[in-house]
Length: 296
Image 1 (cartoon, rainbow, N blue to C red):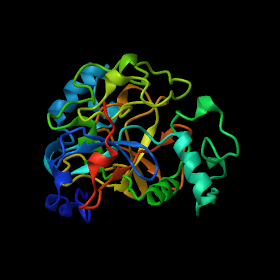
Image 2: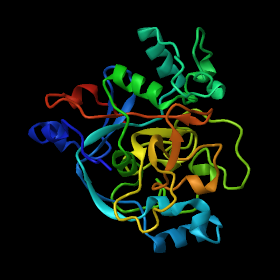
Image 3: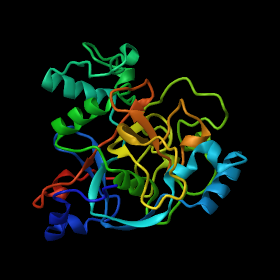
Image 4: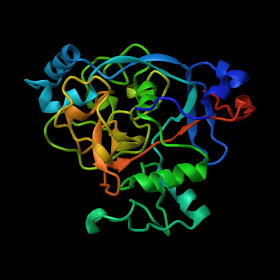
């Protein structure tokens, strides 16, 4: 699994690398609020002993019921500094992309007829829709948006560090059991009906200020679903270069999906009404972050 990306090392030559954790800007292209995740180490994944405790907290008899073994083993990772979207990409932002590029969904090879189109394709946008997360987006469509904005889909390491910080917490808010006050989350075996406007549950914010990294809609990453190195339980997993990795759970998938290290593989040409994304950004070395600062 790749946790480094080209260009990140140049940050060390400029002042942007000295930004405090959570420093918030408004991105100059798509207008999204983005928070700074400083360079450094963090604990990624989990081991069996942690998985047992987490399964017990969530009401499972065995961690295999929640496929926790797909996140084995826990290990120390280093990621260079980057900005992460504070919120999932919204329908309002997607409209801006569609209007600017005249984007239209094109069917991909092997794509099921049932895939449909994103939850908004125009021409009119109702005001109450603008702050909902865009969903029913394939991996390629998410990458097209990211490319237009000059950003990227986050790697798994970027996503997980932005979600859990450096203290190996289980959920973005800490180790407390998920409840509705923390996000668009179902703790029963019954799915919720729909997403909510992004940022509706600020109590569930990550250590850097990212919202909805548990629940609302799943989020694409840039990587394939492959076993982590030295996973002791990798046999029979959903591996291969046709499954992209989703993170964060959704309103549709219930309590097994919300912990920060949870991985979910989906065929990259497929999508569903609870699959969206957020972007990461490595700014140029001469980027003047103060110019775009969002005052809290």
